[in-house]
Image 1 (tube, rainbow, N blue to C red):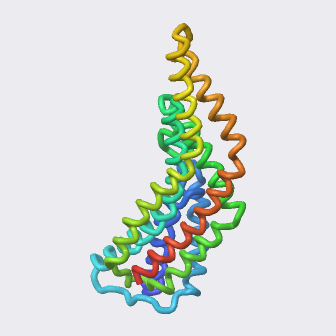
Image 2 (image 1 turned 90 degrees about the vertical axis):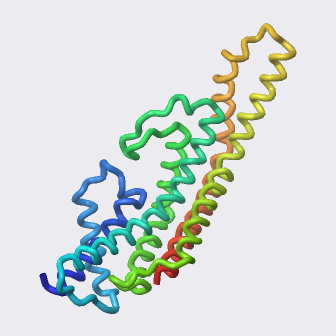
Image 3 (image 1 turned 45 degrees about the vertical axis):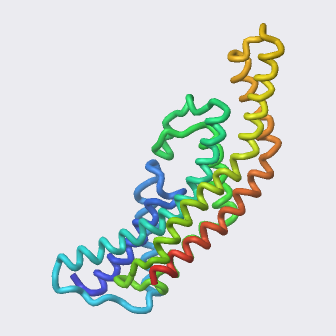
Length: 252
C-alpha cells in the first residue's frame, strides 16, 4: 500500500462514517452507490484541502488503528448532527404520548425504527427545511474544514469534548420540550375540560369521547401552529452547525 492510498483511505473512512449517520443520506433505502459516490467525491476534494498527510506505518495493526480512529471521529461528528435531529422527532413523540397516538406507533422503513405519527411528521418537516435552506452545505463545509482543524491521525479527546457532549444531550431535551410544549398544553387542556364535563354530566362516556376529541383538537391546533413550528425548527439548524464546530475545535 502506498502512502497516498493510505491517506485516501483515512479521509474516506472519516467521511463515510459521517455520512452513515447524517440525516438524508443515512437511510437504509438510500442507494448505496449514491453514498459511495458522495464519499469518494468529498474524499477527492478533501485531498486538496488537507494540509499534511500521514506517513505509512510499518505495521498493519497501526494501519488498522489509524483507520478505526478516523471512523470513530466521523461517527462522533455524524452523531452530533443526528442527535439534534432526533430532538425534533422526540418532540413529536412527546405530543403523541400526550394525545394517545403512542399506542399506534408503526415501523418506518425509511428511518428503520418504530416511529409515531407526529414524530414522523416533525422529522420530515425538519428534513425538508434542512435541504431547502441549504444547511446541508454548511454541514459538508464543516466536515471538510475538520481536515484542517483535525489533520488525519491527530484527533485528541479532551475534557471540553466530553463537556460538549453532555451539553448536547441537555440541549436536545430542551429543544424537544420547546417544540412539543404548545401541542402538549392543548392536549392537557382538553383532558382538564373532559374531566370537568365528566364530573358535571356523568351520563357522557368520556372514555369514548376523549381520544377522538383530543386527536381532532390537537390536529387543528397543529395546522394553526405550523408557521411557528417551522420557525422553531429553523432555529435548531444553526445550533447543529455550532455544536459541530465546537466539537471539531475541542478535538483539534
